[in-house]
Length: 312
Image 1 (cartoon, rainbow, N blue to C red):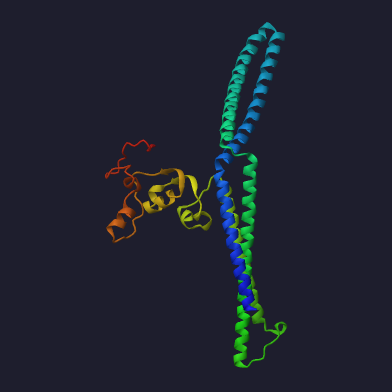
Image 2: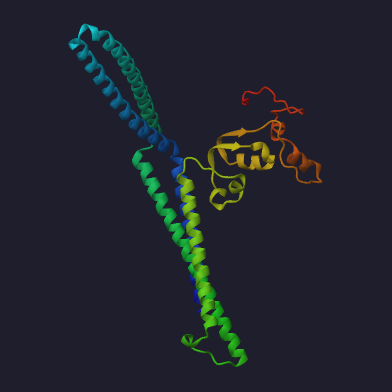
């Protein structure tokens, strides 16, 4: 019984490893289509904005037409007021038309740019569906591994109990007649297995949320230790209050960014200063971040740098 449970568990772990590899491959396949996916999203957003701008332009044009008709039918004493209203309405209509034309230009440019990437919308949709299927299969495989481990643990406990009873010369009580303490132990093992299953599902759900998120808000500790974020790469990184972090933490976070890093700092602030006997380590831990980056002098004043923007 124990050997069979171990074999089932080993097979489940192999299947889970394959599912994890398939999940990673699906994620990478979708990431390779990121530029095309972003382009299609921009096109959809511009199409929505174009629809709204066109409706506003049409409403303004209709208002101008109604005012022009009212001027023709109005008394001379009312015409001056209506003409003023017509001028204002015409100015608003002109601005809305200009805004609509700008959206049309952006829409055409983005459509041409996205088309040049050679990534069809259907290809992106298939990649997203494949990622969702791989994610679900991975979660189910991990849950199955935990169930198999729980079964193997239960089998091991049963074998241990049987061997001990034989050594002591104790009669083995049928399962239905075992004392309540054994039932409580089995229930505890079952609850632990369910807890592990729920934990794995929660982590996979969180990882799925991170995969599909445009913006991720987290603390520095989460970025370093949270398993849902530990394997992620990001396009851009904004660290608010970077002066309150040691340079090592900032560098570790920045190493996982593909395009740009933006830091907001107080040039006069200093990072936490934990006790450190090593002078090399102390320099990294105790020196302000702006000083290590060459953005400030020893007296705390900022240097002129094209990547530095000073506020206040």
